[in-house]
Length: 548
Image 1 (tube, rainbow, N blue to C red):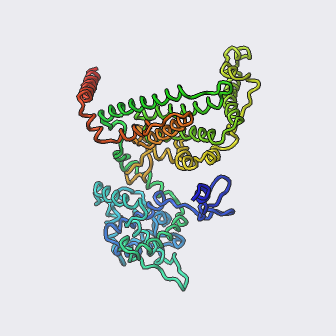
Image 2: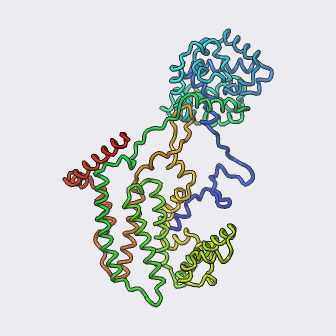
Image 3: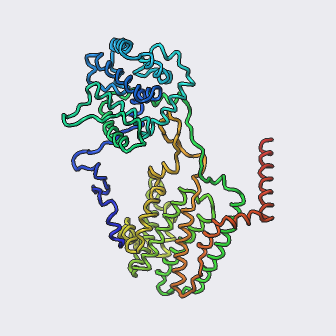
């Protein structure tokens, strides 16, 4: 399969509108065909009462009690028939008289005591709940600590829609719709038997019914007439405990053993020496065209940029973190794509365009600074005395003759340049995804700069992850070092120099992950002595700081 065919398959089932590709279920030229529902935010508070009944009495008894409550609520008020009494917020529209009639009916025709005792734990934590009247006389008996644990355990499962408890709650809500007459079926259709949800998710039949029920539960969003209860439910979480952030189980900078840090330094020193030997060979044998050196200057400078960026990430372990490493990868790949394109397709005018673009960027920068200084009240003479970066430009061309290009230096976007340089996979798999880390888009903020609070009363919200660096990964350093190997090999080959059987980056990758080498290194006498001295210095510094 060639590259063009592979590229054509990406998102081919989506609809393109402007620069956005829409999944088929969500796109229509005239109307919104798909509406996202907020399960955790909206549906969990509405169905939590059913989940409480299920936890207390099991599916069958919970269904009977919930249907009793909803049925009598539907009959209790002249205007109640327009509400869905499978959800909590609907009960806020009942009059006090209607609530009393519901209580009397439940005492006569159901088990009001069971209902009150079960819901008392919920009402203890949420006293302003619209269904608090159902626990009348019982919440005083409820123990707060027991209620807290019980509801937190329920919420911990209820937050995930496809788990067994929320699936059962949705099934009972479906049955409430049937028993109150809100959910009607055409003559040729029959309601699903929700009793099979007791077997969920262990049988294929229960999974089918669960999918059907979950699809129907979407209609709850149209039944919610007020969000006061929903907002109260979640904001009440502030009073029900602080945020809980789970401990990191990934490798962080601060948890890397000292012997591994020393071993890394040793591996990097050897990498630098091997790479430096290659650079000396390049500098001693590369025959630059002194009459027209622009091509050689650009190619060698791009190679040097790739190498220097790699040095920065490889030499400094804190740069191995997930977020920073993606930024380095993107910069390295961008330069590599330009390098490959110039090698493969670059003509004299392309090098000239690249050169002029760079000068134009300096000119544009200088003009912006001038504009700023004028706005600050400086005279033209005073601005000229600053000289700005005009000296740099004059080394190349007079600023008056330097064009300024706003777009890409080669007149086409980098994706096209990557395709023409046979770097499409690098662009699609590494460069493009790293855009989020460079520009701070939501996915990178979510992945690298926030953590999920697991307090079930807090709706799995995010908290800023500011107290430590992101986990360490070899993704950025290893990819940068491999690309540098490619470039150095290419330059050596272009000047007829021998390419080592194993390039410096390949050596480094093998050595840095070799556990036997690490163990041997850590047992060396000089390494142990260094670690002991460092630990002694750390303790001494801490004691001195405590005394002060």
